[in-house]
Image 1 (cartoon, protein in one colour):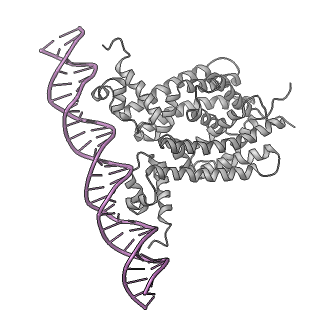
Image 2: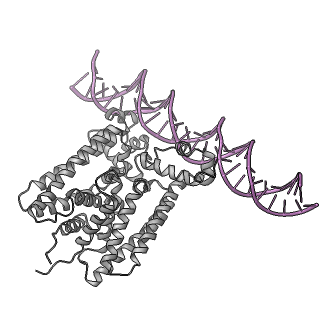
Image 3: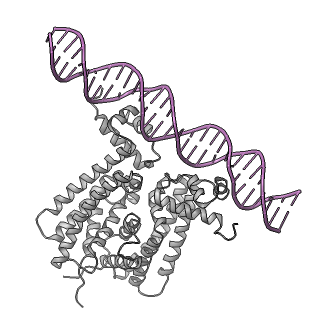
Length: 197
Length: 197
DNA sequence: CTCAGCTGACCGACCAGTCGGTATGCTTGT
DNA sequence: ACAAGCATACCGACTGGTCGGTCAGCTGAG
């Protein structure tokens, strides 16, 4: 009765993600999650310490995925402008393909217990710095403008990415890959050094 | 005892804004708000229909402010690039000066009753279109690139702005005005047409 | 037998919103 | 001048209900 289905733990995570994205963490009761997953509360508290812990697991999963992908693109061979473009386009595509995760992430971060929040922030910080280093590298080489701090450029770009959850719809006219190309173009263009006049 | 203070209604809105930004809408009880404002629940329900209504008022206030300012900059004389730059820099500065409002806005929108949410979205839509028209205008004149849809450029830029609440700190090294200048520069640069090769 | 996996009734805490009531002051008829 | 009538502003105990989390016990595989 259970081996033909997705394991209970995965079902719980999946349904929780869907419901948190749809109605928010605090408007979703534990009862609703376990009902959607076809189990009872005892099962959830068997696999997770708390409702908070469930949220934390969702965060960890998305951070792992994004870090892996960023490393892949950052470590590739080729000029830094190309690597940055590829990484930027990819994070947009990955984000729209996991839009529920993204919605939850930025709506509910402040609801995590302080310790948990701190560790999530630290992981995000690592990601941010890895991305920023690509910008700094290009600035050192002189292929990117350097009159704006790399940190600000990265916050500028990721603001756009993280906000996708509030307006992007998969049913809309533009695909994830198409949007990624546009966003990456905008980023790279905004980094072009001034032409001497 | 009361005429020397800010009126009760304003105090309630102010404390609610502070608390919602600090701990989130759903983690703040009505009791906490009224205690902070030095009144009781009866007073709050005298001035507002519900906790939801309180949130709605906060939204209405910030939308009114931003729309007024955008209209001011968009209607000014001068080339479209300058008007767009000024409007972009200003919305950044205004946002960091009212960072609590911004935090609440994007964390709690999904908690509003469907009807209320619809009307807030409609108002935001007007704002978005006014801003987008500046981009379209520049594209028609040929001073901005037109290979990326204006709507996407605007969503890109406002993603950055709306996300300020998650990372910007007034204690940090950069002022609201400084950040506004950087963000506006990045936007304008990303809109520069390709030079013929 | 054992034990991981899971059940479902139950508990204590909390919370939005209600309601009967009080205090104050403005208005209007005399 | 005065009082009756009424509206505004606010109080705070209370209610009905919800929610996260617990726990004693059931079950089926090894």
